[in-house]
Each structure stands twice: as structure tokens, then as C-alpha cells.
Image 1 (spheres, rainbow, N blue to C red):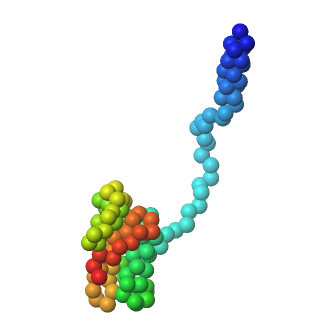
Image 2: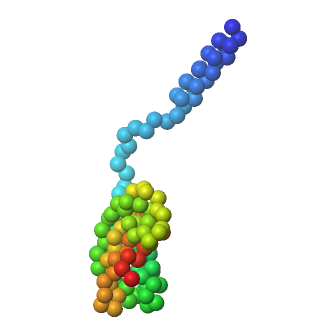
Image 3: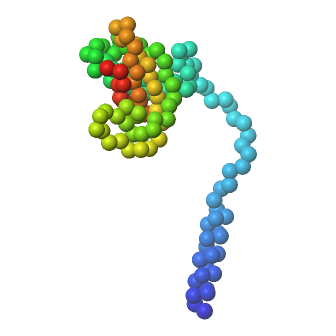
Length: 128
């Protein structure tokens, strides 16, 4: 009998606590939140960290200032592995779909392809 009382008390306590949780309802529209204007060359979809990481990686590899590296194009890609589709000979890569970007950069009149992950933390220069 004592177990039934404790169980009933626990259920009642649970219901009481659940009744205290606020339920979100319709909200009255408030004042508009001001937004900062973006420069025309920068859109919401532009993966700035990945592009910047690609530029730094190429500049480091070529030994030139980052300012001499320009972005030609970028596209979202789902790489077939953790090596961003750019494994070197004998390298083992985790076989997992890795979202990222294919970035085409230009330096000294030559174009280079660079693969990045979504955040730009992993970068591989494909064309040396």
C-alpha cells in the first residue's frame, strides 16, 4: 500500500510540475529588429570562413601575400570522404559524406582548386 501512495504522489508531483511550464503561444508583433546592411559583394549564403581559409592555405603554399589571392568561384559540395576528395597516395580517409566547398582561386594569373569542409577548418589545395 505504501508503494501505491508513493507512486500516486510521484505522478501528482509530475503533473503539478508539468502544469508550471509555460506554453509558448501566439505573440504580438513587436517593433522590428534593426538589421545591418551587408555590402553588395557579401550575401547571406557566402561561406566567408571557408573562402578565407582557402585563400590563406594557397597563399602559404605559394609563399605570396593573401591579398594577391582572389576568389574566382565557390560552390557547395558534399565530399565523399574526410579527405575532401583529395587524398594523397597511400592516405587513409574516413568514408563519410563531408559537406564543404570547392573554391577556385587565382594567383599570378593561374587558377587553383581548393577543397574545404563547411567551416573552413580542413583545407586541401588540389592543384599545386
